Structures are given as C-alpha cells and as structure tokens.
Length: 574
Image (cartoon, rainbow, N blue to C red; front, side, top):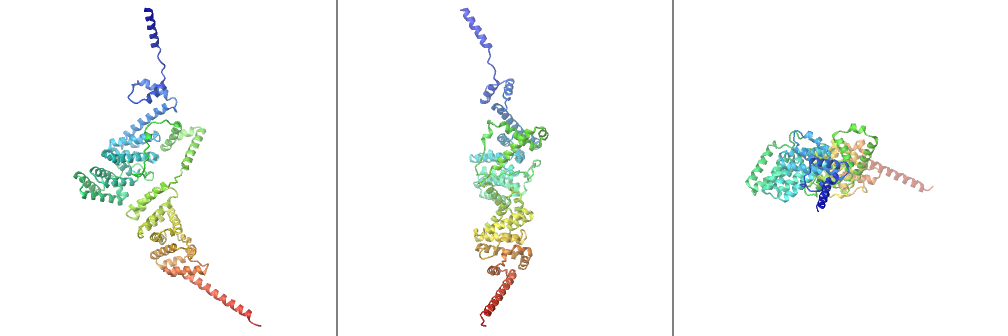
C-alpha cells in the first residue's frame, strides 16, 4: 500500500512540473473578446501578449490594439484643448486617423462639451478647423448633435437640450452649420412656449443672436417679435419673463458680452469654411457603428491613404516621397486616380443638392433688407462651376413670384452683372432661355420678368445683342412673346426716354443685332412690325422701315406701270 501511495505522489509531482505552453496570441484574442472587469492581467504578461499580437498588422488583434490606442489618444487630445494650445493641438489631432476614428472624435467632443459648457467655443473652433480639411467629420458631429437635440426635446431633457443647442449655436457662428438650422430650432422652441423651452431658447439666442442679427436680420427680428408676444401673453413664470427682458437688453447692447467668435478662436478663413445644410426634420445618418471596433480587411491600404492625406494637410513627407522607390509612387498615383475616378463616377440624379441650393438662395434673398445686403450674402453661397446660371434664374424666379414688380430684384441683377463678366453672360443666357419659354408663364409673372430684363437692358447691365433672338413677325411670335416685348420696351422707355431709345436702335452695332425686330425682307413682315411698334408707343423707331416700305411700294407701282405700257404696246394694231 505504501508503494502504491508513493507512486501516486510521484505522478502528481510530474503533472505539476509540466505547465501548459503559453500562447500569447490566443490569450490576447481571448482577453479582447471578454467583457471589461475580468481577471487581472500582470503588466509584463499584457505587454508580451500585445507584442505577440502586433506582429501581423492585418490581424484582428493588432487592429483592436490600434483602435484602443486611437480612442485613448483622441479622447486625451480633446480633453486638454483650450484657447492657448488649440493651434498646437490641431496638428496632433491630424496625426491620428480621423477618418477611421471620426465616430470616436464626435463622441469624445460631444461628451467633453456637455461636461464643460464654458469651453463650447473652443470645441466649436476645433470642429471648424477639422471641417475645412475633413468635412465628413464636421458633418458627422453636426448630424449627431441635431439627432441628440431631437431625442432630448422629445424626452423633455432640459440639460441635454441646453448643452446641445449651445454647441450647435457656436457651430453656426463658425459657419460649420447653416443659420437655417438655428432658425428651425428657435421656431420649434417658441411654437408652444413653456418655462423650459423659453429658457433654452433664451440661452440659445444669446449665443447665436449676434450672428443672426448680422446675416439674417429679418428672421432675427421675427424671433424677437415672438419673444415679445410670449412676454405679453404672461403664460410663463416671472423668472423666465425676466430672462426674456435680460435678452432684450443684451440685444440693445449689441451682444458685447457674446461675440460671434471669441478672441483667439477666429482661426478659419471665411472662404475655406465648408457649411453643412442639414435640416432639423430630415432623415439623419448618425452612423453609430463608427463608435465600435470593426475588423477592416483593407486596414493597411486605408492607413497608407490616410498617411498621404495627413502629409497633404500638414505639409509633411516631401523628403520621404522623394527618397521612395518609383514603384511605390506609381502605385500611389494609380490609387489616387482610381479614387478620383470613383468620386467622379458618383452622379446625383435626384437633384437634391440643386434643390438645397435653390432653397438657400431663396431664403437669402427673402431675409435681406436691401439689395446690397442680398448681393453680399449671395456671393457667399458656395457654387460649383457652371451653377452661376442657377443663381441668376433663381433671382428671376423670385422676382416673378411677387405680386408686382420690385426694383429690388432689378438692382440685384444689375449689381451682379457689373461685378463679373461671368454673371453678365449668365443673365444674357437666361434672357434667351426665358424668351423661348415665356409662353409657359401667366400674365403677372410674365410682366415681372419682362420689367426685370427691361431694367437690365436700360442700365446696360447686359448687352443689347441678346435681342437677336427676337424675330418680330406674325409667324415667329405668340401672344405671350408680344406682351413680353411690349412690357420690356415700355420699361426701357421709362428709364431711358423715347428719344434715347430711338437713337440707340439707330446705332450700327445695335441695329445689326436687332435686325429681327425690324424686318426688311418682306413687306408683310415690315407692316406687322410697324403696326406693332406704333401700337406700343414706339412709332419713331419705325422711320427706316416706313421709308423702306414706301420705296418698295413706289418700285411696285413703277413696275406695274411699265408692265402695263409694255402690254398695251404689244396689243396695239399695226
């Protein structure tokens, strides 16, 4: 029995001496797949596991390590940004892969802003700088803020609503977000006033009021009228009524304590900023999946692409590119060409961007107090190459919608034509397009369009060569086109006087361009033109056509006499 017991003890010692082999990679995979708060891992063993997992950069383990490092780095950078170090923090932030970690950045900056509201202008300035280089990051932050505001508003969460609207207000001030979203939020808060909604609206207005007063004075005045109405109704508590009165005083003081952009944070040039036009009620793509780790099969290629983007943003890597091999440079060029080709291949057939552009132009015109302000704001609207004609046509459409013609639109068109040759050519093209389709418009709209172009022609904003598309004959004109020409000429006569317009039509260059308006090819067409001009009060411009018709008639009479004499001579008996 003793021998048996000794054998058992020796076997136990041998089993204890044989420890299982340590598979670092498998242990790391097991550790990353378990929830946090598990078994304690000694630092030395953890480093060994990380080193083993990082040998293969395409492996999920390595990507998980880099994801955790990216999350910690972005969070750390965002948490220590302030007015003094923001210029130094931005290059550090671009060193991280913000395209891959844009969800992490959006979440970190929103949490940091909610925790420290006085630093909201700093966070907004940081988003504005990144938005100039990586607009998809700025768009994601704005989309999530709007979505968070909608959820908080439905849940009556005053704290979240207050912090979110403050962030949105400063993004509007930095022109990352369009002022339309600010106006939509104010309309929603003031539609059914309660103590909480009015308090949030007052706080929001203190932050964004200076920007709205400068860029949308009409809308700003309407908002304050609504505040006055709520104050007069007396349906809210005295505390909130006092807040509205304080806001009125802040407005009188011209927001001296709430500037549009605080000192030291105006870091983005106006022409470099990209403004996102996201509506409050539209469907939003929050992209929550960007907050969590996902395995990327093209991880190495995407990292290399971001390195190229980072080098372009920060102006680095020129020496490395020169020392690189020719093969790698050729491959990068091919990848860039493929990426450009992919971008060029995307075509928006829904015309969503065009509709949004027209909406922005319409709201800009409607909110302007005078034509100079309208032109100043319209020049800030971002247009792609070839979209100038859309702006011109939108101005004309707004003019046509008025009950009666307003010189406000004529002055806008005149200023644009005199600013740049591009606008001049666009309005000239618009004249031809509208004349060919004028029969589609009702009388009132037709009248406004005709007076608009009459103003441009009378002020020499567009060339009179545009009149070459008009052929004043009974066959080539319709009732609508004849009314259009009549109203346009009457507008020109009022602005220039009958004598001046008659002399202008006699000018050789104008005469050549307007040959279709004064037909000399057929007596029938000439009589029609003479009768038309006489009926619209422009008889003096028909003198040359009358002389031509008189000479033509005399020639016909002479030819008839000669033919009669010849025939009588032939029939006379010998």
